[in-house]
Length: 464
Image (tube, rainbow, N blue to C red; front, side):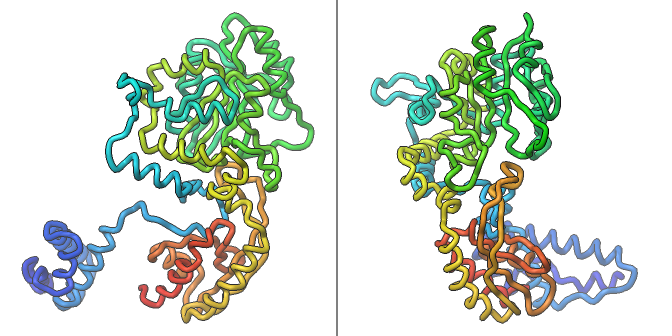
C-alpha cells in the first residue's frame, strides 16, 4: 500500500499540468489548490479502504480527472432548466416563470437603490407594501392589500393577527396538507389560535359553523382544497353563506383560495379555481392567495380585504419577519400591470401564454422538431404524440390539459440514463418518462427554447 501511495503525484506537480492551469484561468488558484488537496485526500482514503491494490492514474490522466471534478463541483446547484415535463406549475422547477417586464423590473431594482420605504414626493418614510397595494386593490376590488413571502406565511400572520388565543372555525373537509408537510391545523396551532373543526369530511353546512360560534370565536375560515377533490355525496357552505353568518355575529370571514387567480381560467379548461376579485365581491373580509402559481408572478403570499383587518395584519410583529424584499415587490408590480387587460395577460404572462397555446401550434412545433431530434446520433427514435398533462404537481394537480409531446428513445443505454444525461447537461432538460420513452412535453416549453432543446440533444455526443 505504501508503494501505491508514493506514486500519487504532489499537489505542486499536478498544479503545473495543462488541464489544471486551464481550470485556474476559469475559477481561481485558491479553488484549484483546495480542490486538488480534497481530491487527493479522498483518493488516499479510498486506497486505504480498498481490499486489493489499485493502479494510480498517470499524472496527466489524474490531472484531467481532477480538473473535471473541480469544474463539476463549481457548477451552481440552482441552474436554469428547460421544463419539458408539461407541468406548468412545477414546484421543483420554480413554478411560474416570470414575464419579461417582471425580469427587467427585478434587474432595475437589484442593480442599485430603490424607493422601497421612502416617498419620493415628500421625502418621508413610507411602507413597502404600497408598491403593490393600489394595483391589487384595483384588480380585486379590495379596500387594502399586503404581501408576505408565501401563502403559508399569509395564513400564519392572518390567523395570528385575527385569532390568537381564540377559536377559528374551519370545515373538517378543508383541513388540508400541501407539499413540504404544510398542514393547516399545525399552522393554526403555531399562530396561537385554536382550531374548531365542524362538519364531516364530505359534508359541512352553514348550520355547522353557526352551532360552533361562541364567546371565544374569533373568525370563520374557508379553505380552497386546490390539491384534492372530494366527489360524490358532498356538500359545503358557500362563501356567501359564511359572509352572511359572519355579518350576523360580527365575525371576520377569512377565505384562503390557495393557488389563486386574478382571471377566470374556465375559458382555458381550468375549472373550479376561485378568482380573488369574485371572493371580495362575495363579501369575504380577508382573501389569501399565492403570487407564483395561477397569478404567474414571483413567490409571495397576497392578502387582500377590508382595511380594518389588513391594518391589523400589517401591524402584527410577524409581518416584519415575513415581509418581502424590493425584488419581489418589483416583479409583482410588473406582473400585476400586465393584468390590466385579459389580452395583455394572455400574451405576456408566461403561465397564461403557455396554457392558452392552441394544440395545433404545439403539434406544428413537434412535427418540426421531431426530425431534428431523430437526426441526433444518440437517439433511435423521436416522434410526436398526443397526450395530456397537468397544470400543477403539488398545486392544482387534478386539472388536465391537452398537449403534444415528442417521445424519444436512446440508441444505446436506458431511458433513465438518457434522462440523467439531459438533466446534467447544458442546457439542463427535464422531461418525463412514460411507457419506456422520454417524453418532451411542449406545453411547458416556450417556443424560444426550441433551438436550445435541440442543442441539448446534439451535445449528448460530447457528454460522458
